[in-house]
Length: 164
Image 1 (cartoon, rainbow, N blue to C red):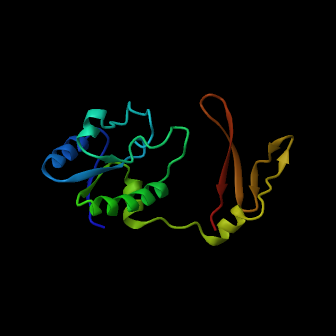
Image 2 (cartoon, rainbow, N blue to C red):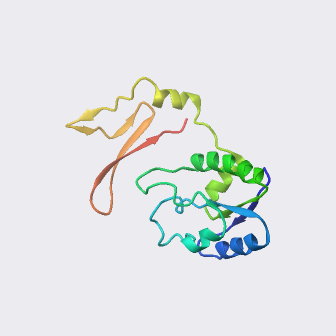
Image 3 (spheres, rainbow, N blue to C red):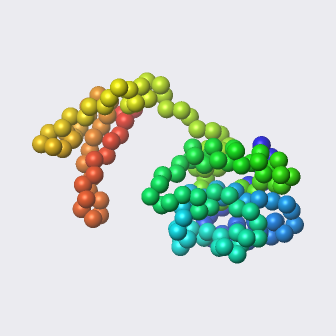
C-alpha cells in the first residue's frame, strides 16, 4: 500500500498542511479520525469545513450518524478499500488524522477474538443469572459482572471477560 500519512494531535495544523500538499500534488484525503466520521460533530473535532473539503476530495468524514457505532475495524476495511481506489485514479492517498488506534489497525491489522472466547460468547446462548429482575453481579462462567453508576446516577452493568 502506497500512501502518505500525516498524523498528530487535534488542532495541530494537519488540515492546513494537507491542503497545502493538495495544491502541489494530486491527493485525496482520507480521514484517520474517530470523531470526524460522525455527521454534525463539528465542534471540538477540528473537522475541515465545507470550503476546505470542496478544495480536495475527502473520505471518511461525515459518513455516519452519532447514534451509530464505528470502529477501528470498520476504519481499516474502508481505508484498505479507498487507498487502491484513489491510487487507481492516479492520485495519492493522503491519510490525515490523530486516532492512532486507526493508524495501528491499518498498519498492523487487528487480532481476531480467540476462537474459544468467540464460541463461548457467540455460541447458542448466553444465560446471565438474574436475581430480582437484575443481573446477579460477580463471576459467572468466565464472565465478570459488576455494577457502575455514571455521573448522572444511571445504573450500568459492566461485563468483562476474565483473562485465560
